[in-house]
Image (tube, rainbow, N blue to C red):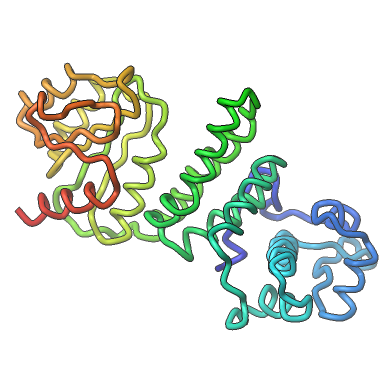
Length: 296
């Protein structure tokens, strides 16, 4: 993982300068521990603000966060420092799915945006978007949903996590910007649909394997979806709905009358046979359908 590429809303900022006290507070360690790491492993501050006082750069702090996470996972401090600061990752221990889930839940609960960003980037790097979604992110989100049902209001935790998942998927997808030319797959949500993360995961999974995909976002008006589809002429258009309350059959029919190949996606559609369109409700099925349409 490239620890320099991590960005989070409360994490190190570009061009920042951190005092040792602030870094110790951020990491949750004592200033003595920070000085010990610097003396033993050469992981001290690299900036000087006035020729006398040493400051930590943003990159220093990101690496220290990664080092601390490796220590928490059982790696000795010296090895963790080498992995974080010299890029020697051969000895980095594999992290179990259960441990990733635990770390993500803890970071979300504490509103640790920088840690969330780093953990999500690491998870996507290790597993890819499809496996990261099904094996790690869905279990975390389901656990939060269970807390809601038990009366534990955790809106801020869910907001922090879903927001950072979306940003991490954007960062991941940006690596595959050079998609093949030609007609793309269009991914759209029904106009009233707010729960769009599955479509964002689908886009990341598609561009990862070379399927050109355009994602419109959530709460897009029907007229806008129709206008964009008319200009892009997609090879297939996936229309997402999470629940029966957000489906838009009139939009499906308007798109069909305009000659577009439509696939409804998500659990909200009920019996798709009534609409005479394809229906997918999992990532693998959506990827297979998109591949078939591109080959046709």
